[in-house]
Image (tube, rainbow, N blue to C red):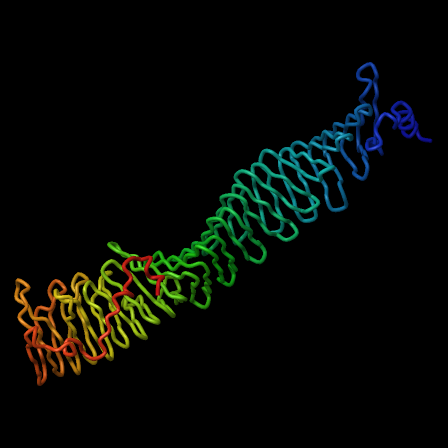
Length: 501
């Protein structure tokens, strides 16, 4: 038997296993070049020098030198410290303090934890073998494939292969730069989970959320709690967002918003989808499009709102389907469907459209309203065009024709051209509003001028026939043109009324 093995045997006799509980095993000295023991200096410590190998349970400890305390079952190790936890997990450092009773290792200076392809570097690391948790308290760096993570505080759950980070967390890879208050990262799935205010900066977009996850390999994510995605001239937000970054595909749930920062348009609802590569998005479930203007905003609702997108992700066209209603302080309307085009700011209403402008109700088979500088500029009413407004007597002024073109100044209708089969019922009044009579006329075309939303003059063009009736001599039937329909009860009086059909 060699001298070294005799010494080890002698030590085992001095410090028998019975000193430890059944749950505690001793730290064993497997090999070393030199061993020193002086009971006068310290009866509990053994000085071990050179190519030291220690074992505790299934782990091995390698170092240049160590102090082994058999009584307390702990070891202090120095120089080229290497703790072999398993075949795939190893910890390196300059020094170590290991307690065999608590199974807690404290590694200091130039610390490196390697688990398969994951590498953690820090200044000080505490590893608890019972919980299988490694912890650092002052800055650590993790490299996992193409991902690099840095944080002030961190925990590594070795069993689950999960890192949990706190305070000033940064995750970097060639595609993204992520900053978070609290983050968990799984080295097997390469998914990052956010539990606090987080920002993700990509090549073409940036993201903010306070809860959610991001798959760093597939670039697929779900964001919750104040989630926002900024992409060129567009912002996508909602209570919950599912996002495929490579495809430009997103789903938004509850309090969903697609915001066009260029045209100042917000499309909102409780469910929306966006497909950037195909250039469109849609919103449904309480869907609203807001055309924001300096002095006022137009609120528009329908069952479904679809937007065609420009390459910069601004809104090119809007299509509203089924039960459309819109409200602005000076303009309201409704129809079965509607289109809006950004090129000329025109809005076309289809299928039983109605527009209300102050006292005027305008109907036709199709109505196109053009805007300029965020104000009504002109309006084309095609087929069965009809304008109705209430007179002072609570009866109705009426203009009817095959087509009409209306012109606006400061959002006030001031001129109307009636083209084909023009008819009017008009309450003619003096400047002091005294009734002169009721003018009922027909002609091929008409030109009507208004002032303060009241008819000022009518010019009949092309073989007109006109009769001015005294109020008491006109029959009730002659007070209404054919197809007269007054639908004031459907007029939205506030932005909340657009949801009532």
